[in-house]
Image (cartoon, rainbow over the protein chains, first blue to last red):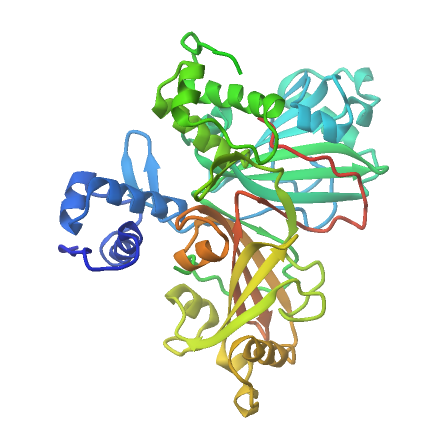
Length: 252
Length: 252
C-alpha cells in the first residue's frame, strides 16, 4: 500500500482515506483476505486510529468490508442480488416461494403489526421463515397472519413447528389476494435475527415489509430482515430482458 | 421517564435500554422534541454514556431519532413512503417523472458505471437530478447516459444546466425501452449528496440503482441516493388496491 500522507487534502480526512483504501482493496487484496490490524493500517496511511475507524465503517456500510466475529475485518465479496417483491401476485407459501418455514406460534404481535392487521389485543399466527442463497442465510422473516384470515384452521389437526406453519399458509391461500404493498427501509438487527444471520445485534439491516391485501384489509403482514452487508435487493419488472451482469459496485 | 436500573437484565444492556427508550419516546415525547443531553439521559437510566450512545444509534438506524446539525437529537416523525421503480416502463424524464433535472455534464464515470454502460474510458452524459417530497429533498440522483444512446444530441443547440439535461432526456426517449432492472442496497452518503440531503457525509443511505435497457444493452444507469432516516421506499404492484395507512413502525 505504501505510506500516503493525507494532511493536505481539504475534504474530511476519513473520506479521502476511504477512497484511498477502496482503491487499495481493488488492487492489492483479494476477497476474503483479512486486513492488517488497525494500528498497522493507521501508521501506514499516517492517520489517527479514529480517522481510520471512520473510513473502515464507511467501507463496511458500502459493502466493501465485513467485520466478522472472531475473524476480524475481511474484504467482502460483491453483494448478491436477491429478488424481493413477487412479480406475480402470490400468497406466501405458494408455488415458487423461496422462503422456508421454520416455526409457527400464536402470540400477540407488536402494536404496529396489530394496528395493520386490525387485531387489537388478539394473538395472531406468527410464522417464522428463513431464506438462504447459495447455502447462506440472507434473510429472516416474521409473517403475521390474523386468525380471522384462516378461520378454518382450528379444525385442522396440525402439529407445531414447520408443519403447523405450512398448514397456516395453506389455509391463507384459500383467500383471494387483491394486491400487495412492499416497502424497504433501514433497520437494525434484532438479537434473534442477528444470530440467525450471523451478524451482531444492532447491525444495519434492510427491512422489507409486505402487506398482503384481501377484501380491502391486510390479511397478512411480512416483516423480512435482510443482511445489508451482503445483499442488494432487486425488485420490479425486468420486462423479461436478460442482460449480462457485471459485478457491480456502488459508484463512489 | 423515571430512573430504571438495567443491571439485572441478561441481554445486552444497550439493547434493553433501546426498548425502554423507545417506549419512553412513544409515551413522553412528541415528534420534533429535543432529547435531554447524554449526561442527563445516562444518569436517568443508570447506564454508562457509551451504553446510552449505542442505544441512541440503534434508534437512529430505526428512524425513531434524528441527529440534526446544530440542533441535537430529536424525535423523528414516522418515515415517509416514497415510491421507487416505475410501475409502468418509462424513460427518465417521461411524463409523470418525479425527478427534477439540476445539471448535466460530460465526464468519465466511475469504473463500475463504465462497465455497465460498456463505455470504457469514454465520457458519458451525467445528469444530476433531485427529488423532493413535501418540499424536503429526499433523494439525489446521478443518471449516466452513454453518448451512443443519444447519437443525435450533438446536433442540438442545447445550453448547459437543467436545459441541457432535459435535451439529453428527450433524446433518450427516442429509443425503445425494453425493460429496467432495479436494486436497492445500503450505502453511505457522498459529501455532495449529503449536503443536498441535509445529512452528514457518510450517513447511511439507501442507494437505488436502475438499469434502463434498450436493444439488449444498458442505455442509461441511474444511481439514486435516498435519505435512510426519513424514507421508506415502496415498490412493486399494489394491484390498484387502496387501503387505510396506519403510521407504521418497524416491529421491535
